[in-house]
Image (tube, rainbow, N blue to C red; front, side, top):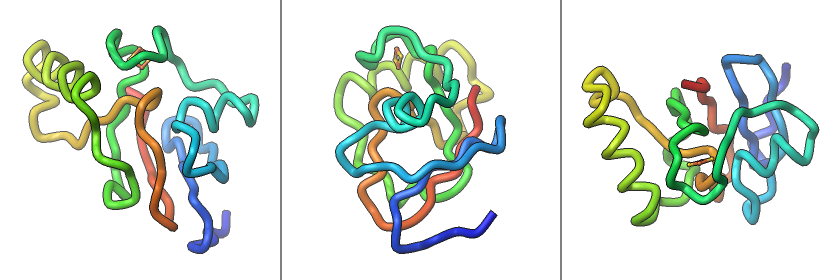
Length: 106
Ligand code: FES
């Protein structure tokens, strides 16, 4: 699988699926548009079902906003093992930088 660093890309290491993604769409929306499964619930940033561990490319993601930060903090409180993991919500995370974000579905 070649990586084109002039694109916005997101790769799910759990399913070994990689997509081009628009900076206007979330990781969830990008996978949905490509008809690839990425488990989610509310799509509003509050349920935490779409929790992902960002393995690389964190710098290409737009910063998390309040609702996402609240949900991420709750997930870490409920599971201290997540404290040192780079967490995001796939329904809120947008790839805004030119490069690839690699993640695992939690
Ligand atoms: S789907 Fe509910 S927080 Fe992402």
